Structures are given as structure tokens and as C-alpha cells.
Image 1 (spheres, rainbow, N blue to C red):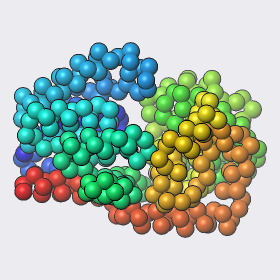
Image 2 (image 1 turned 45 degrees about the vertical axis):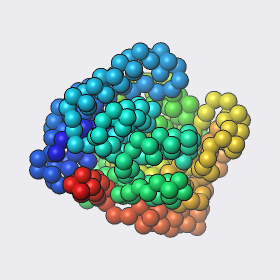
Image 3 (image 1 turned 30 degrees about the vertical axis):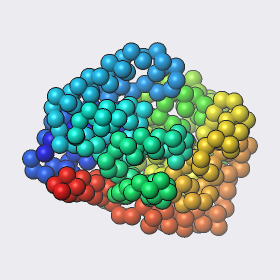
Length: 379
């Protein structure tokens, strides 16, 4: 069968490439065409456009590049109609992909599947109308989404979480001592506090200085190791480092770092879940400009109580979230002290991590999604 996939960022490229490999196992005649990245190209098929030509984030960048975005959208729509795939598979990236779904549903008979559903439970809940109208099947990687969509009488498929797959595969293939990790990266023998300060420049600018200042008193007993973001130049970090706070930066080693860390300061996002899967006690830190205003919006506009995937999946506060006006040096320092030195507090977090891992289920999200997609298409 012919599969047309659309992603708009690096994480989508990774998840889509794994899905493509799984589809090949289920369908020996699988033929791919896609808007995607290098990882998808490595699997095979024809890439129409690289996701980097689509990836505009935030109101101002989108406004400035609106003509390009609309041109890309028209090209995508026309290319799908010309190629006539058996299915269009959308991967996350809702701003672009939901427009594609609307066009395909209105103008063709091609079924539309959505893998990694839009996070409308956090905000833009009105998009449920578009999803019910334009998406034939939705495949979720977050278990709590089942009940959310059921509330709108829209059944979806939970297939497991790709982070479980990635961490499981890494741990099976990598058995490394702390000594080997430390020697390769020029570290000393002190235990490690990992700093995951975000993947975008603005996140690093906003979060890293406070993380370093908060962690400074603990460098007597621990060493700080910062996970460099993919594609970020090491020189970018220099403007936000504190010469009085020793820290080592490592690139392309986030999983290695988490495997060896005793605690972590983590910005919100997928990293919070990955940290939990490695059983590392953590503090979630996310600075925003206009902290008090954002905190007000969070209380009165956002539909969810938490911002970290760990707490959302657990449906309770497992890890402390220091966000907007609560993201202060004093608060970070106090919470980090608890996760480092309060044995009962650490153990309780570990118990909750294990419960979350049970909720997520076993590895195999891509395989499960591919199996269900092929079965539905054959029907």
C-alpha cells in the first residue's frame, strides 16, 4: 500500500521513521512519500520537502513566513491528490496537519490517520470538531487521552509510548559504568546532577542561569553536567554560564547522562518523561516572561492541572513543577535539596515512577500502531 506521511519537527521525524519501519514489517509492499526529515529518508521512499522548511514556531515567525507556509500547504495538498495514497498519516504538528486533514476530507476519499494526537486537552479544545470531522482514526501515545476523547464520543487507539521504546532499546544495548562515562567526558568521581535546560534558544536563555545559580551550593558533593541540545552550538551556552559555578556540557549523550545521574533539573516536555523512565528524581523548571500573568492564564485558561507528562500521566503531583512565578532560584534550590538528601521523598518518587511505567505499558508503540493501521486499511 501507499503511505503519505507529514511531520513538522525533529521529534516527528524520529517517531515517523520508527512507524515506517514497523509498517514495512506489516506490509511488504509499503511505499512511502512524505514531508519529513533525514531519519525518514533513511528508511526509504520519496521525500517531497524537509520538515525544516515547515518549522515555524510562535506567532511572529508564523506571521512573517505566512506566504511560505501557505505555499507549502498547497504543495502538500496537490502532491497528495496527485499521488493518491491509500492513507495519509499525520504526525503531531497540528497547526499544519489539521489544515491538510480538512482539505483531504473535503476533496478526496483518502482516509486520514493521525499518529501522536494534537494536545487539545491542554488548550485549543475547540479543535475536537475538526478532528471528529476530518480524521478517520486517531492513534494516541498518552493513556489519559482515551478518556478525554471518549468524553466527546470519539473513540481513539492507545498504542503505547515511543519514549518507552527508545529508553528500553537504549538500556538493553548499553551497559556502562559511571567510571567509563566520567573518563570519556572529563568528569570527576562525584555523583552527577543533570541539567536539561531545553532544546530551543529561548528556553536555554530563560532556564539555564537560574538552574545553575540554584544548583551552585550542591557542587561541594555533586558535579553539574548539562545536556547540550541537538543542533545547538556550544558557544551559545557561554553567555549563560556562571564562571563561579563549575559545569560540564555534553552533546548527543542525554540518555547516557540520565543513566548516570542522581538527580535532574528538567524543563517541561518529553524530557520529563524520559527522566522518569530512567528513574532519576527530578525537579521541573520552566521560566516564562510575565510570570504572574502566565500563572493567571494557567489557572483560568489552560484545561489541565499540570504541565509535565509525568504528572499528567499519573494524574497527581509526582514531581514538583516550578513554572512561571514559582520558578525562582530559592524554590529550585529547596526542591533539589529534597530530591538529593530526603531519602523518603526520593523513594516515594521512585514508587510513583514505577506506577507510571505500568500505566504506559510495554515497549512496542510503533509496532502496535502499524499493526492496527494496516488491519484497518485492509478492512
